[in-house]
Each structure stands twice: as structure tokens, then as C-alpha cells.
Image 1 (tube, rainbow, N blue to C red):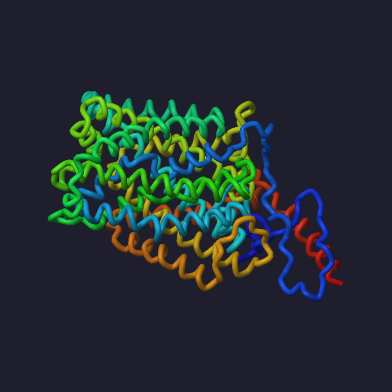
Image 2: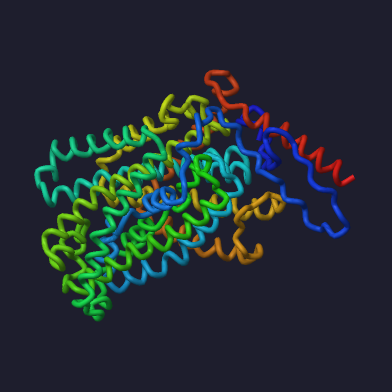
Length: 504
């Protein structure tokens, strides 16, 4: 790659000591066979710093933000039943977390603690393969996130229409979707700490009716009903539904720079979230399918509310419908935050212009990213729900394949990187751990429709174009970009000289 298109210096996975000054390693002894871990990874120099630490994310809010990045409750899981039947739905939600959610969570925990800067997976790809890979990763993951977020207003309105049919179509539906986007974008603007604690409250309120539903269903369960299968199976819809309901574990990594003590907080939050998410799907599905003698075709979007009404009465039905709205709010807020901080991290890396890293003067939020994401989400909120799910899954699959590759590359090429949390496996086992979910990613991409392939190819071409456009603007001085990588290379050079002197 020529120097004319380099966005920020050499594409080395630079990793070094504290940014303020180089630190010396202790003298080596004859027994020191392994390289001494570098004290801190070199992270991009933030363009805009926080005004204080009061709004840092702590463990409990981070758990619920991750939970809402991924699930937010069993809402939207109904198509897994209608497409394949109760038996396959239960198998899917019981097995899929082990072959997908756990590996992705482990990768996220290691890289988010080793490189705890805003931008998350963009930073990891950049450090592993260089700026082009980081930029393409940013395009795939950002677009998959905003496309995914666009599903939530439609899902929310579907549930509202069961109580107020007037908002189910026409101008009333359009107004409800638009109003939802505007109001919740403003809430996101008020601060990440606020969003985190709101997520805690929303999670408790939206999960409570399902806990009651599962408890009330126990005396009436008929386990034989779990063995039913759909007569006409739609495997494409089935796997897309599983994937959509159990992915985005790495999304919170884009906010790692906003987390208090990420080296311990991130692994704990991810572990709790995996367990909470799995149970939040399995228990309501087992209750609804074990009590009701309903055909798989009856399980369309919003059927959980009908099932709760038949199990406990209309009061629980209305609570679950209200919980769907609350869950949608949490999902929207978590993913909007993730996308906005991803753009901030890309600006810190020099992949996007500096203005994407601007923080609001009082709330410390990346207001440019919030505004852009909100406008894109609003523009695509009127696509069909299934098209949204399939397009988001394909783009996310591309990004995850690159993320697994970056994880393995950094493990092999940067053994000296300090990893507060490291997946306790040898390298061959890590390769196998990544190959299993990677095979599923390829499968999801292979079964995609031609429309999804065309849309995803177009977005990928757009991502390549954005990279070279940003390179052109940087070379011509059209826009201002971060030069943080220049400072990082200076610090890396000092670290290398210091380490070399110690070894002598």
C-alpha cells in the first residue's frame, strides 16, 4: 500500500507503554525466556477527552447494556418457533449460545481488556491488519448496527398495535416510528451513564412479566408439546432469527474507553450477560410452548403477549406488551450508544474526520455520531422486519470473520501484549474455538437471499470507497483528521529503545 493512501502511518500493530512517559522493564535474568508483557497497549490519542469520571460505566449498567445490545428479552424470538417448530426452537436457543455466544464473548473479553479504547473491534482490526482492515470493519459493523437498530421501532409498533390498532398502519404508524426515533435519540444525548442506569430499570421492568409467566406456567406444563416440529420448515428464517437474537456481544467494546476498570469489569459483565440472555429466551419459550396447544404457525411476532394472556390473564398480556416497548427502548439506546462511540473511536484512529469525536459540552456524549446514526436509522426504519434482520446478519458476519482473524493474529504476533484477561487455551485450541462459529457465519451468508447479497455487496463497496475518500481528503487537507498515530509511533520507538537498553 503506497504512502499516499495511508490514513495514519505504518500499519503496524503498535503496542507499548504508558502514553505519558516510557517505563523501564526490570533487568532480565537467565530464566526469562518469554518476552516481558508491555505495561499498557498503545491506544489512539483521544481527540476530545472526558470532562470527568462521574459518568464512567460500572458493572451493573454494563451488564444491562450488553444484555440490550444482544437481546433485551425474548421479544422477536417467535419466528424461530413458526419456522421450525418448538423442538428445534428449544434446541437452537439451548445449543447456539455455546457455539456462538460463548466464543464471541471470550474474544471480546480478551481484546476489550487488552485494548480498552473507544472503537472496540475497529481498533482490534486496525492493530492486527492495518488501517484499511480497521476502516472496512467499521463500515460492516456500523451499518449492521444501525440496520439492526432500525428493526426496533417496527417491532415496538407491532406490539403497540395489539393494544391500539390505529398505530398499525398508515400515517399513524409512520408518525409513531419517527417520534420514537427522535425522543430516544435525545435520551442517548444525555449521557452514557444515564443510558446505562435506564437500561437497568428497563431490563428489570421488561423481564419481570416473563419470570411471572414462567412461574405460573409450571403446574400446567405438558413437556410432550416441546417435541412438535413445523410441517413446512423455513431454515433461512430459523437460523437468521437465532443469529439475530444472540449476536452483537462485541458491540459494547466500542465504549471500552468509558468503562471503569475495564480489565475486570468487562469479563464479569460478559459472563453474567451470557447466562441472563440464555435464560431469558429458554424459560418463556418452554412456558408458552409447554402450556399452549398452539400450532407453530401461530407464533408470529408478538405472540408472547397472547400466550401470557392465555396463561395468566389479560393483565399479564398488557404487561408484556408494555415490556416490549420498554425492551425496544433499551435495545435502541444500547445500540445507538455503541454506534456513536464507534465513530468516535474511528475519528481517534484517523479513519474519520476529527469532528466525529466531538463531545457535547455538558453531557460528554459524541453528539455528531448520535445525530448521524439517528438519521440513518430513521431512514431505514420502514423496511420489512425480515429484510432488516437478514441484511444486518450478513454484514455482521463479514465483520465477525475479520474479528476472529484479528484475535488470532494478535495472539500470534503480539504475545508481549498485556492481557488482563486472556482466554485460557493454547493457540491451536483458540483456532478451533474460532472455526466453529466462523463456519456458522459462512452458513448464514450462504443461505442469504439474492437481495441481501446485493445490498451487502453494495455496502462493502461503499466502505472501500469511504476509506479511499477519507485518504484523499486527508492528503488534500479538505478535512481535519487525528494525528494520534504519529504520537503513538514516537512512544513505541521510545519503548523499543528502552527495552533494548534493558536487554543489553
